[in-house]
Image 1: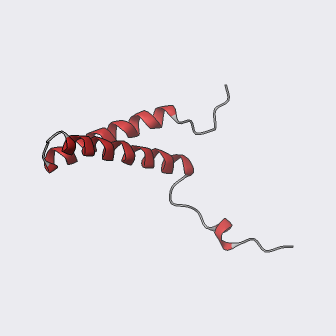
Image 2: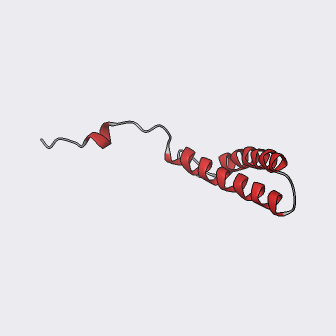
Length: 72
């Protein structure tokens, strides 16, 4: 019987779905912060805008990215 690799036995911190949602929300938040800076806003308003955009993006992507468990 072949021994499995240690990587296959180790559980991951985040699932693939959660990683994709997090990465996309960080991308949206960074884009919103960058656009705020480019339009002449300050750093504080850019951070707040990016945080709000990232929070909204998490909600949106959580709804539209399926977990693969439902069959239609």
